[in-house]
Length: 145
Ligand SMILES: [Mg+2]
Image 1 (cartoon, protein in one colour):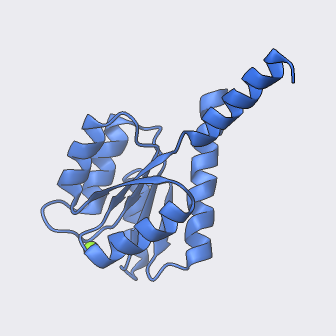
Image 2: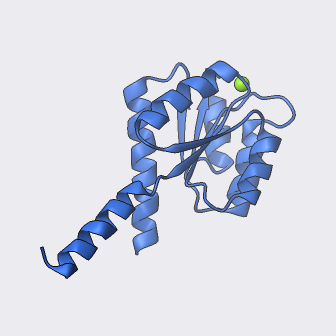
């Protein structure tokens, strides 16, 4: 193996080690556990927040969050308000609202607040992971332009 090849392989391995980080925001511990388990299988780092206010604070203090998963109905600060604040701070971050609310209005509010996607609970595992992957991919794509 040439030295050049060795360096390229080494770089590829390092690149694979870089894990994307996802902020999961939900007031129900069981929901955070569920999302965490799905996302860790895909080798994402997961950070958790239990309400909108905590999520905004964590987001503003951590420059390495690549995607946000947001519940709507939470104490202290709702997911709609937190979505608005996070998107004002960083319009580029992909943000997916996942809510148990069944009214179509909640989806509209989420999108108006800046959410990129809206999914309703209970969320199907395959749908959830494919939306996460596609949002993450479009972010990477935008960064490379
Ligand atoms: Mg909730």
